[in-house]
Length: 112
Image 1 (cartoon, helix red, strand yellow):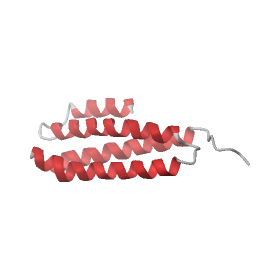
Image 2: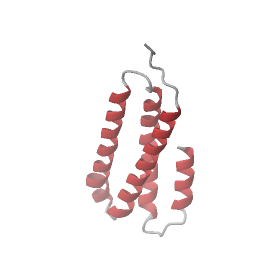
Image 3: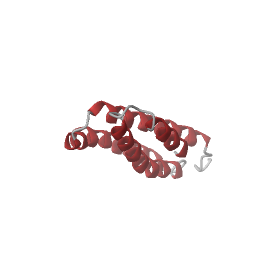
């Protein structure tokens, strides 16, 4: 997630002015939500609660996109495209990192 944050900050600093506020909002929101959700998923690998944690994480991410799209953007009066594109992009990259980390973790499931 540190790499995502650094690349996101570097990219955000060179974006056109109209895109920057939405970019920073999306990056901050993603890091605040994805960090704990990703960590919770990684520590649940190989346990009986893994699938439930994964489903709950996906639902939280979908709810976040809906909340930002339906409440935050209209309240701020900002253009929707920069925020939603950045938010969904950051969440997809974060999910990919989660998948890679999950694939590299040894399973703690008991062998029968």
